[in-house]
Length: 397
Image 1: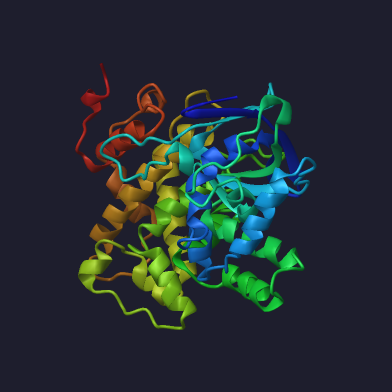
Image 2: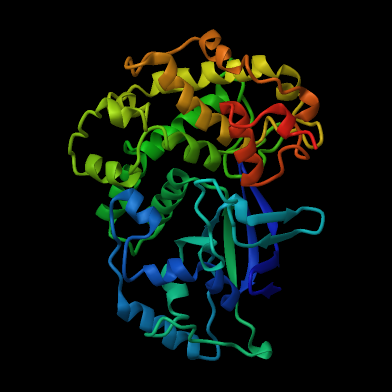
């Protein structure tokens, strides 16, 4: 069922080792409507996952026309799944009724989050040509099946997959397809594993989720949904990666392309490091150092609010969640520069970070979603409180 800004469909979860995705049967018109921008880009520009991999797959217009002709026949069928990735901020999951509702993401004013309109909700990881066949040469929807000719598509949906994970799925799927050029397929697999700001952030997220000493151990949702037998996951991997990459690069895709072209990234100036303080460490391939800084910072956060940090199951608890995490990561960028001066790459101890929380008179009873509303407004307010631009009395109505 769909309206202009919302689409609801039945889903079934599929568990494979530590990963979970969803399968659904979605009318073709509705699946095209939420992936329209991605399908249109297929023949005209690099899509995100292809730009990340540093390639552009050749488009075969004849193949698209062949599929269009096939669709006009009375026995047309697409039995294999269309694989899509959807940002978790666009998803509302009703596990009790087995439904998923997707809608646009609209950030609050004053944040640097990018909006996600309705027609950009789904990113297609496999099945682009099949979906493109539903658009005519003017890139409008070609087929509008009557109710008695309902054409549904089998969809596999990954929720909250960051770009590195999307690339890995994309590369693996293309490697498995016999019609894909094998040299290109193996290149895809290698590109998915090669170095980039996104890949580094992905690896740091995995390390922080696995390290025994990490305050974020078992707290990061690898694909935007909870892992089986783990009920403490409160931060999406995508939120982690998007927050950290801002401290490494202003143009992560451009860095990615240079690395793929075997170009050496220039050392950043001190002015650049004030905007991206972990950039020199990334260029020096000191991912371990970046991980240590994140680790020590969140030890300080846990020491500041131990009760709220540990009580992840408390209803409305704000501090363990993605919105608080994003604000804290922005604050980390600010205070790291203040701590190290021009000694970028130095790893501060937890006590050094703790001093930057001493001024915050925020008690556990206020660390809830009533004080800090869900969405980017709560994130923005928490960041202002951390930086001293909001005071405790601003929170009390």
